[in-house]
Length: 174
Image 1 (cartoon, rainbow, N blue to C red):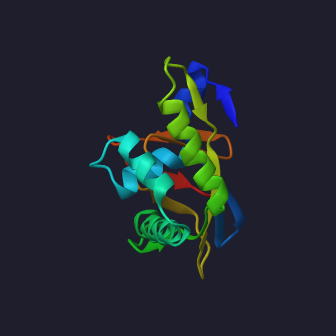
Image 2 (cartoon, rainbow, N blue to C red):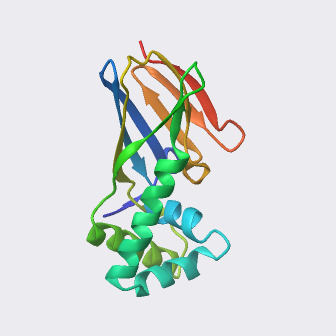
C-alpha cells in the first residue's frame, strides 16, 4: 500500500494510457491520486486534512452519493472534440470500489499526520473510461478535468502532459 516515493514517482502521479479498441472505440486507463482528485473536485476550498477527516466520517450512503457525483462530473468535464466541433464525452467511468477508496483516504490521512515528513504516498489507483462513436475517429482534441492536472497522457509511443497552462491537446489516433 505504501511505498517510499522517488522524485520521478512524485512527478508522474497522474497518468492516462489511451488505446484504440476499434475504429469507433477508445479506452482510457488512468492511474490517479484519487484522494487528491476527490479533494480538488468535491471541496477545493477546504484544507486537505479537513477534507480527508470529513470523508472518513461519512456514512456509506453519503460516500456513495459523493462518488456518483464525482463520476458524473468526470463525464461532464472529460471529452474529446472532433474536427467537426462535436464533443464526445468519456463515459462508463469505473472507479475503485468503496472499500478501496476509503482505504486510500484513511492511508492519506495517516501519511499526512505522521510526525516526521516523508516522501511516502498512496499509490495511484486505476480508473477506466471509454468513448464510443458511430463513425471512425482519427483526430481529436482531448480535454480532461483540471482536477487531474498535471497528467501524463500516453498514446502508443507519444507522451505529453496536460496542465493548467496546457489543458488540451490534439491526438492523431491513426
